[in-house]
Length: 385
Ligand SMILES: Cc1cc2nc3c(=O)[nH]c(=O)nc-3n(C[C@H](O)[C@H](O)[C@H](O)COP(=O)(O)OP(=O)(O)OC[C@H]3O[C@@H](n4cnc5c(N)ncnc54)[C@H](O)[C@@H]3O)c2cc1C
Image 1: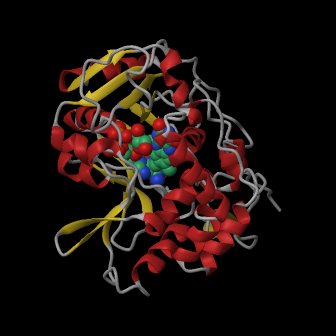
Image 2: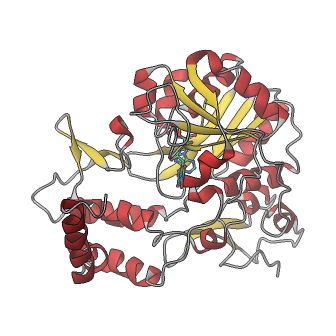
């Protein structure tokens, strides 16, 4: 029987699933609702293509660190507000579409599934904009990319670094003149199943919210904030206190896929042509002359192709080359998230408890409450800012 990488290391990128000529591999949910490849022994002919396509078994070489990080803000306010950071993704995607190319990225369906899709028109980019903090299912997009490249199309594929590594391993290499890869600096990914369980608890038993939540957004775009929100009766409702519990669990690293805690891609040397992220701390060491109130992208051009792509998008952007020192506030550019000791307890609680209880157990314990009060007192008497 063919063995893939261990469950602890598997990123669920889907390269093995995409490459199997016998369709003997399916992606199935595990106990924490993460997608994992399962081989059907009756269909498998042991060709081992899946092992060759696995970026964990055969790691992708990384590119040298980019010369200088770039801070960027999209000039179009509407696009900026729809984007999570500074809108770098949209600038690159539009340039590729202008060349008749296609874009692959993650969207959220009306049923709250997060999955990779292919779009070819600028109007369709809106569904890809905005971070979805749950692991996207790449489905059969790697196969579609291969067909697009064979048809001579420009392709921009965006995703987490492990997904980009999976795509490159699936294709065999990244030496396709018309393929552009863009990865995100990634904190780690919860499963879509976890996210859906949270949404059910947020909506169903509570009179406070409507039974059907629509257009959930993980982050506030105005003021570059971290508050989730959703739509009801034409209004955007901000989630507060215990209703933010999914985001709080995510930010504290308690919901990540096990492999995320030893992620091999959390370094300034990257696997893709361009890397995009939030430029946390922009302007703290040296003035950045543009408004970052609604977000600012950190852009790393890791290859010559990435540098060329960047040169072509600058017309619609306010940008500046910065020092590497200024990126130190972006922790996941340097190290993976640390696995919290209570990760499993938190997941169990999310699965079984009402969200008020989850919040009370992990974010409103007596110790946390005392710390908050002491913090407030120290602020009032001016000892702590
Ligand atoms: C799970 C996750 C964790 C992240 N963690 C960090 C972090 O720790 N530090 C940091 O600086 N930045 C992080 N980011 C990146 C950041 O949130 C922005 O997505 C990024 O800066 C792009 O912003 P933008 O303004 O250019 O474009 P946007 O319009 O916001 O771009 C959205 C892009 O992200 C892709 N995308 C959205 N959701 C997913 C998903 N679930 N899986 C794969 N691709 C997705 C879309 O396909 C699109 O290409 C994370 C993103 C995700 C999805």
